[in-house]
Image (tube, rainbow, N blue to C red; front, side, top):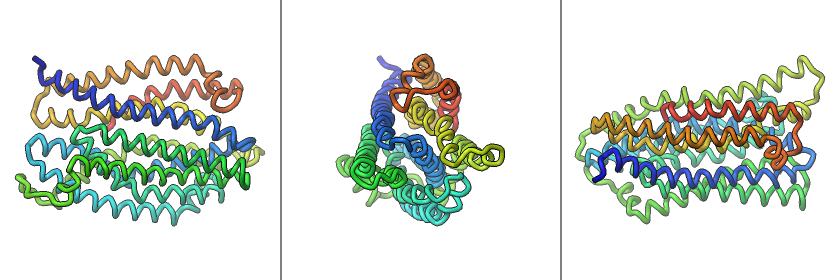
Length: 395
């Protein structure tokens, strides 16, 4: 007979399989697309990649701040109320959070669009970065509310819906990127800056597709009706208090979760502003250098870091369940098992990428110099620590 810990491990493996499978496919597609995309950009490939990366670093920070840790908090709260048998309280919480996050999405999308020019100047991307930032602000409209629905499915430990929405988002996004890049660079104006803007606008297109997938699974499971018309809850808690408590738990998510993005933005902005003070390199040359130590390397290590985040987030509802029940032994077993999954995947992957640096870099970009190889190996090695940080920080 299986113990509670064994059942939890089996459930965790099932959730991990769905999330990791979809995430791996999405991340692999998100790396493979670089080969034709970079080639179609021609001589401007490194500059295009750097401009794309600049926009996405700002976008990632706005995504994190605009959701303020609510999706993970929703997953924990839904798991807790379901454990207590008060399903209607979970429905009410999700409905309230959807309204709040829709408003936040509008607010942060407007802020990102209005301040696109000063943000572009701060990062040193100049006027070419402005349309990139504004195209990405459209995705901010949808992401906060969409992430609440993902958090709801995560709280139910129904990871198939979560995984399929992620996969659909990535596939549609990449299709839009490649089609528009080919149309502009091979058939149209050959303006690589316009091609980059369309590639970032693809985030909004993919998000629309992901939202539709989540709504389909809500309708299919019958939960859409319950979310729209929740019954009376057993737990008598003031709804404003629930919102306040959930927001309070989100503060560590913002502070800790934004650290990586903030450091990248500082690297980008200081590099682009300080280098002209001490060197005579042109802006285009500096953009090439930026791609060497940031954009090119980050895209190829994103696969490793993405899996680390997936492994960490899958266990959240199960850890919450055992914490609420006071089952310390099962809780400790799950946490230890989480670390085993992480190390078992990351160590072989890091060693393999470090040994195959030159052929990997050549396949996706160009034959690298010794300087580019050194930067890539260093980035791969530090991804173990970054991934460990993503695994343990509160989400």
